[in-house]
Each structure stands twice: as structure tokens, then as C-alpha cells.
Image (cartoon, rainbow, N blue to C red; front, side):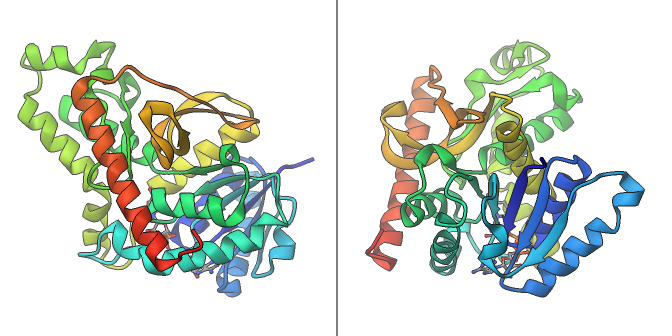
Length: 318
Ligand code: TXD
């Protein structure tokens, strides 16, 4: 029996999610959007490519939550993306309203789903989603760290002319300018990045520029596209999380998870390494952070908390 993935939001990321899931033959796909035609059109278009790519999943589009019931995984991109010059935080007001509506739509129709939120401002929106839906905290997670880490690894691979699969690193904390690249755990071909600095293979200044480019990775693409924001890499990142859950892969992935004391932080969502398996977020991995990393992580979490306080001013029910 094929698993069922519902995509709430059939826009740039939602459509790409649907295509990637189909190409991987991962699950049947229900594309949901208030613009039902977009959902139906993209579902039909991707389905019509199945003879070419040889996948065998059902795809459908709808604007009726009844059609999404009993989903195994729900990936949420419903919301508006940034325009040039906007910060992710500028999306708070409108996307908070949308996520409340989505939470109402899914909480009774798919109470056992693993829910992956992508909508920005990510950390606050996923926290609001969990509160509005009252779904279990270990089954509501945010996608950002995989994308940010992937951007960082890509930039490093370009700089050092090393294949991406030879680089290990991750970016934690909030999905914003305060995100933290974990340099202490960054390895290139098994060598610590700090040793490469000592050997003069890369300067600390250049590394800091790459970290900065990662933080602004989304804005760089928004500038190029002018209308809309990144969607290929975000969709690839979301599918990795869904696949890890459905196949019980128990990979360690950087994701926005609910913290309840881990990293000295309580009752907030932020990007940390988690183990994703069939139980959802099965474990939060507590790494040894350097004092710098600890300080920067705390600053990042504080900025998430500040934005959540702004959200509570918008909706006092949070
Ligand atoms: O790393 C990350 N988490 C970020 C997230 C990476 C890139 C983009 N990020 C955010 O994802 C972005 O800032 C947006 O908040 C979301 C979705 O971005 P996308 O580029 O897919 O936006 P689109 O193309 O505008 O698609 C959004 C769809 C669109 O088709 C709307 O009709 C639909 O959302 N929409 C809704 N669907 C269901 N229910 C409601 N209420 C609704 N409102 C809008």
C-alpha cells in the first residue's frame, strides 16, 4: 500500500516537492491549495510524465481538506514568499494567519501525520503550527537547517574545489541572519576546517564571507528571481525529511525541532541536529559546542523567541 503525502501549498516549492516525490516513487501525492486549479493542474502535469520517468504514484489536486485525510506525511508551504528587500520576518503577519487555517484543516483529518513545515519565518511559523494544531511536538518539525547546511557545503566545495560529498558540516539555530554555521564540526575530506585555516588552505576572513553568504543565501536568490524565492533546494531538503520518516532511516539531520531543555533551551523551536525515523523526531542530538558556538546559538534562539513574542502580539491565543 503506497504511503500518502499531502502538500499544503502547490506553488513553487509545493510543485517541486510533488515532482521529486513522484520521481522517487516515494508516495502518492495530494496537492492542496486554495488556488485549486494550480493544485489540479500541477498534479495532472506531473502524472502525465509517469510514462517517461517510469514512476507509479497517484497524484491529485484539491482545495478540500477531506481529500487530504489520513496522510502519512504533510509538507506545508502555504504562504507568501519574500519580495526583494523583504526579510523572512516581514512575512510573519500574513503567514501566521495562513498557518492557523492550515492547522485547523489538518489536525482532525490527519492526526497521525508527520508534519514538515517550510513556510517562513520558519521557526516561529512551525511553533505556531504546533500550538494551533496541538499535534505531538515530535511529529511537527521545520525544514531550514538542511537547506542552510546544503548552501554552506556547496559554497565551501566551490571555494576549496572539493566534491560536496567530501564535506561534512551543518548550520543550526534560527533560519535567519543569526543562523550558526558549526565550524567546530566542519570537516573537509576528514580534515577539520580549523586545520585547513592553520595550513593556509583557506583564510578565516574568506570562511567568514562564506558563512555570511550562507546566511543571505535566500536573499541572493530572491534578488535574481525578483518574483518568488528559492524552491529547488528547499524542496529537495523537505523530501529528504519525508523520506527519512517514511523509510525509518534514522538519519541525523539539522531541522527546526521543539526544544524542551536541550541546549539549555526550553519551549521554543530552533534548528538542531535530530534523528528522524518512523517515530518522527526520535532524538535531539546534543553536540559539544565551543563557547563561541554556544553564544551564537543562544543569540539565534533569542531572535526566534523575540519574533515569537511578536507573533503572540498579533494573535494572543498563541
Ligand atoms: O528554508 C525555508 N524554510 C524557506 C521557506 C525556503 C524557501 C522559501 N520559504 C518559504 O516557503 C517562503 O518564504 C514561503 O513562505 C513558502 C512557500 O514558498 P513558495 O515559493 O512555494 O511560495 P508560492 O509559490 O507563492 O506558493 C505558496 C502557495 C500558493 O500557491 C498559494 O496559493 C498557497 O501557497 N496558499 C495556500 N494554500 C493553502 N491554504 C492557504 N490558506 C493558502 N494561502 C496561500
